[in-house]
Image (cartoon, rainbow, N blue to C red):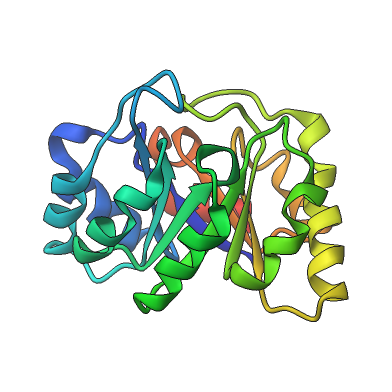
Length: 213
């Protein structure tokens, strides 16, 4: 069954502990934490101190998505703060393979994200270093965007290549996901769905999470 990783990007940041507990009770499989630097993407979000503080509040799996330039400078610190998986963007660093190796050598899971304009074939050679690949179905930087249909087929392309290489890499999808388009993403091979405002703005978060499955 597909796993659900709610993003806290559009959650109530003044009450994050309460928000995380609410998502945990609602049945979330993990917590998606978006980190933005205002350089790689035109927005700034939470950083190291927030991840460290949240780690004290929950045992949930932390799925940390770094939308920052030069992530190699920060992956170790995010792991020290409590990240269980760290995803970097292929477009954000000169040597993504080296950064992925660093994450895995530190004993955590490594993810590689691609933005909508990046073709899947560009990262085929890096798949053996990835525990997870993240397909962005919106331009990274802001929550609440509409899913980009042209990005959907990348899920199936990556899934096929993962099977071809006989890997256990999972495919995560993030951007504009709701109950209407989730079946299409699951059918293409998505293993994990990230949803932010669709879940956090719902009056029944358990129902919202269940609807994505």
